[in-house]
Image (cartoon, rainbow, N blue to C red; front, side):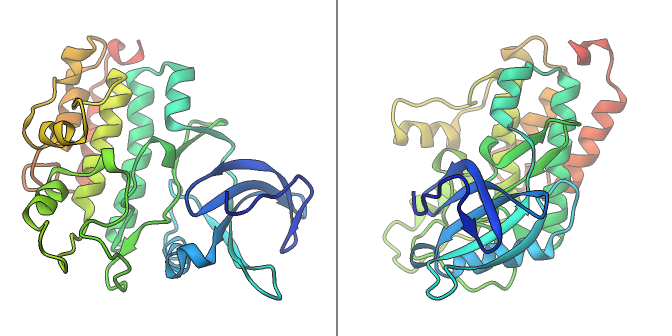
Length: 291
């Protein structure tokens, strides 16, 4: 990992307790300062460059109960900074996939968690921010009340931001890319200057994949290799969740399938529309939703 800190290490006044996770660009620690706990994210400046400042900018402009809250940032070590340090609220809970495995949640519980993520995306999209990496690992479910928090805007983008990507497709998790992103890549393989711009519809597609996995325990598309999987994403219709798992209410299955439409025009048009659809589904919930 880019930064290896032992319990008790001091970083800008924060005392490290333990590592929470790591990725290609940085490491996240649980830390405390003046009796309060924080999630401390250390990003290696030579590797992330301007992307670290962009994450800070995004978190600073987003204020919503379902979005992780930034509480401070700085550069460390102070004499010759190697890392940007981002302190956010510590969400005491589990990643979405771990929560689902442990809780075996009801349709009602799943819908409430999805509604939290949809509200976070609605707030972000209304402010011109696209997350670009919606997946189970970037949703935390708080243990105390089941509140969903969208975290890690490290590869997020916003309207008017400077282009940082040197590839045709922006950074992101390959399996969660939208059909329109794959179509763009296929159409522009020989165009060195072509750049795909991810938008809200890409976040909604990714949330559709997350929803499908929560309802059925698997991805909606299969392939022996990357090329076959991409072809399935572009051309195969997923088995409706309520047919894959008989405990899934039809209304929730339909919401999921609308998120997985092949084109943005046919897909759920916005995160706010998704919120309304989930709220309507909850209002019509019967006893089946508590199984």
